Image (tube, rainbow over all chains, first blue to last red; front, side, top):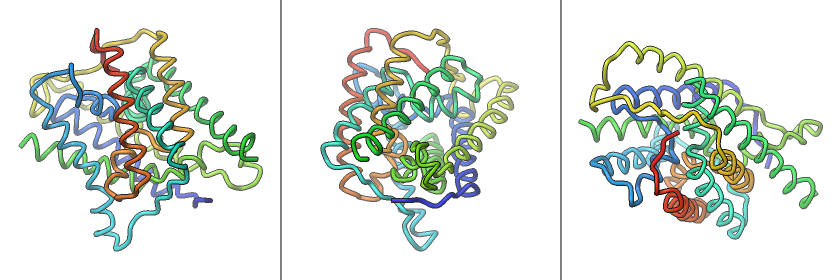
Length: 143
Length: 145
């Protein structure tokens, strides 16, 4: 399904994500890496902040509802993958982001903002891999 | 207080994901589909998400450099790793595969649960299993980004 080019909304949304990352460091001293926050829900990691991480994730989950109330309509969202593809995709995205210590937020927003070469390498590698994956799915297999 | 700020900061992050379009897998996949440039189907919006996010975070992090400690925690836990090693690259490849297949990365996957779309629960459940597996795999040494 085609989507509309939305540079202004996307830049505003991106700035909100960035502000959230800055506030998480300012208040809680933590990098806003969602894969890291997700992984630290699980043992053997233990500290006193499990409930805080769950509350942060609750905030993420509450966002579409708040958006729909304020906006009067839900934001467009279309999941086009089959159940089998979504299971494979979820396993890979979860495993890879934790193995590689970060995803689009931890490496992409926070790491690049810290001028981390390590994060830059991760971002280039996962962007290129994702672009090749979409090319194969849409134009080689699906073409 | 710590729970209030965590909730509001998470909510701000999630609203950013929704408003930017990151939480819509179709938009993500259309961004990654650079071969569609020639047919007009490419949606470059997400470059602006990255741009807006990095500019604000770059400036904000620098402002924090002048501060001794966070407002509600003992210390700033900045990542310390700088090595470019096999887990980093292999993890990025595996993550890129999953992102390109499903159109969800971890933040939007959590946010999408709030829409109650069945596919979001399928992806989210699988993602948590994948995170758990990788976490056990590398649990001999806890490392940060």
